[in-house]
Length: 250
Image (cartoon, rainbow, N blue to C red; front, side, top):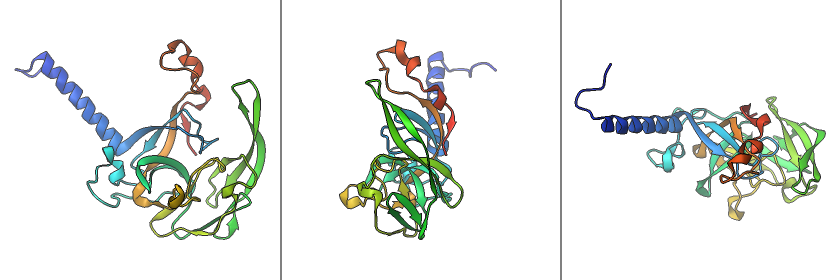
């Protein structure tokens, strides 16, 4: 089929660009949105420099699913509930323009507590097993050993956590009762994560409202160790973490 009569090549090009932009907006709004990891709060599951696809449709849609957070409606539509253990992107309740990524460990009605670094759900400690230390390569060529534990939630979801400091501020908490329509989220890097253990009054996250959920982190599609800048294309391939590409997030 030839070009539509009366349209110049310039108009055809402009329309093609417009259609491509509209398709990209629809995909970003309805299906998947890319995010990058700027901090180490979810190590070792997610590393600084990881780039993720977050599924927007997993929990339905809220105003935070819309581009620029447009308040077209309140609550969630086509909503479904996160499962315990999901890694989620959400808007920080006290700073609704800021995206956070954490793991959901507490569901509505749960009682959550941390004692000597051990997470408890409804009075039952979550099993965790010490595994081999994580060996972190330092810029000076040295190696840092980090304690790792494999934690397994009641529904069988299992993942690794870091223990950087024994007896840190959030290793012992009171009991948090998760209110209806809210969730309790924690970082896997337990001593380097501002999460639901910290109330909003001191800059923490507190309970996460269902409306603030943006989506579920599903896949690492790219990862860079940050050793190459945009002005050093000859180093780009050496900076890629090939072992993390296309890694499913659990």
